[in-house]
View 1 (cartoon, rainbow, N blue to C red):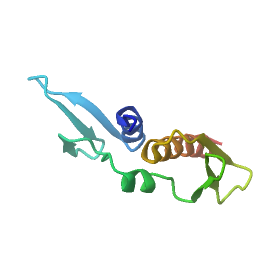
View 2 (view 1 turned 180 degrees about the horizontal axis):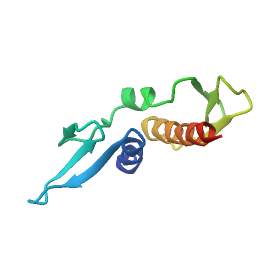
View 3 (view 1 turned 30 degrees about the vertical axis):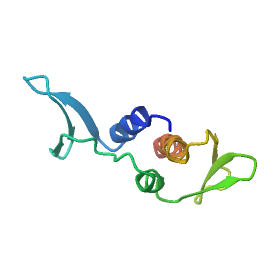
View 4 (view 1 turned 180 degrees about the vertical axis):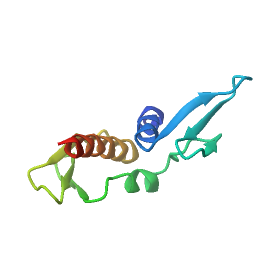
Length: 108
């Protein structure tokens, strides 16, 4: 299995979490809503990867090993991620790319 830590870190930052250290150098996560967590705010599970897609997006897998996501609001917008053999990793990556597109679309 591939390590999803970097992907989950990026997703956590997109959701408003920030990794910090206190005076004793202990790492923790803090959100803009003043929540704090010692564990990662994005669990390393397939369920979490599946639920990480932005609202209004659908996803599926083409038979030739490509994960695909489409924006329901704009059928011209699609994202593709090559199947690495690790579904959890691929779906976190797909979700991040969709969130990045959503962020760009909301600025327009």
